[in-house]
Image 1 (tube, helix red, strand yellow):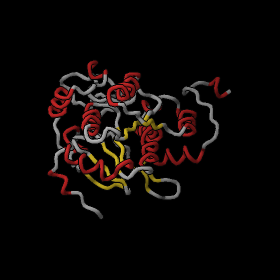
Image 2 (image 1 turned 90 degrees about the vertical axis):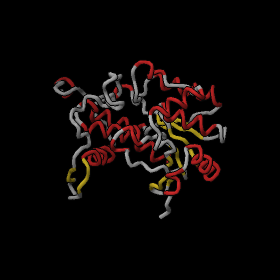
Image 3 (image 1 turned 120 degrees about the vertical axis):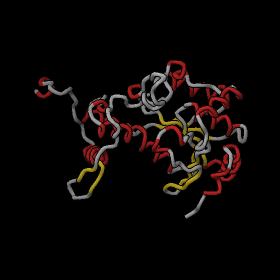
Image 4 (image 1 turned 60 degrees about the horizontal axis):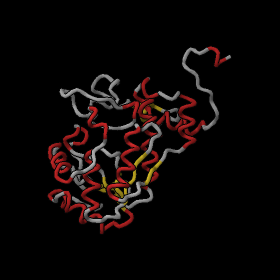
Length: 261
C-alpha cells in the first residue's frame, strides 16, 4: 500500500504542483462551487490552465449553483464536466418513495444522496486516477482526520486544504479575487441541493444548514439485517431493493385512496 504521509508537511500549492503533472489528464477537481472548491480551482489553474473540473448535478441544485458553472467558464475558460445520476434510478426512487423522500427519515435521505450523488461520483471516479477536493479538517468532526493525500479504491484522493482554516480560505479569496457562490451573501455557509440546504444564524455551526430537520447528534442510519442474513446499513438495503425492483410504480401521497382505487 502506497503511503503519502510525506505530503502532510507540504503546502496546498506544493501538493498541487506535484499532483497536476503526476496524474495529468487523469486527474480532475470535484467541486460544488463552495469557497474551498473555488480556492482549489483558482490555485490549480495557476499551475495548469487546462485542469479538469467536474461537478455532480443532482437534479435538485439551486439556480445559483448553475450560475457558478457559467462563472467558471467565463473567469477561467474551463468547461465544467457535469455528471448526472442515472435517470432510471432517480425515476424508480421517486416512483417508490416520492420526490421529497428525504424529509421523512434519515435512511431515505441517505438513499436520495446515494442515488443522486454517491453513485454518479463513483462512476466518474472509475474513469480517473486522482481527484482533488476542498475538504478542511475543521469543518466538522468527521473530517478531523482527513489526510492531504490518500488512496481510496485505487484512486488517489487529494485534499490540499485539509489543514487550512476558514480564515485562510477567506484571505485567499480576497487576495486573488476568487468568484464566490451567490448563496453565501444570503447566509448559506454550506451549499448543497436546494431542498436540503438553508441559511444559518451567526451562532450556528457552518454545517447546521444541511439537513436541518434531522434532530439530534446521530444522523447516521443504523445497521440492518437483510433477508439473506448479511448485516447492512439500512440505506444499502433500500438501494438494493431499488435496483432489484426497477419497474413502474405509481407514487401517491400517503393516505391518497384515490391513487389506490
